[in-house]
Amino acid sequence: MQEIFNRRSIRKFTTQQVEPEKLDKLLRAAMQAPSAINQQPWEFIVVQDKANLESLSDTSPYGKLIAASSATIVLAANKNYIKVPGARGWEEDMGAAAQNILLEAVHLGLGAVWLGVATAESITENVKKYFDFPDHILPFCMIAVGYPDGQENKFVDRYQADRIHQEKW
Image (cartoon, rainbow, N blue to C red; front, top):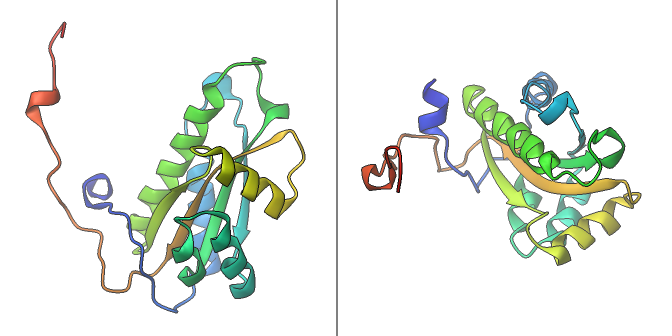
């Protein structure tokens, strides 16, 4: 699967809009992700309106590129779908969904970049307030998507044999 090796964080986008059928494919790919106990805790918000993208870009100090994206997909977990109370498996589920979006974007000729939300309490709070999330919705990340402008998804060898251990440390 060449998409795994070619995927790069694309931070610059053209003004070309991503077609609705491609956005649909990204979301379908996300929902095919593996999920602990098959709980599928994900919820998605697709933001495409330019004014909304501009204001959403202010929710994170790293989010300025959101304003130039064709669409940004916000991934959040719904606590009501988490089958084991207190379990942290939802984060792995959401990470797998995000990775599927990123790989499908490459497959579709798009660029995308993952912007962490759950990684910082201040960003989490900003996103919660922006969308007026109820308490049972946990923001996880945002993925800005568009057609690459000057950057490309291409192979860069990141393999490091010295980080592989056999049987023990």
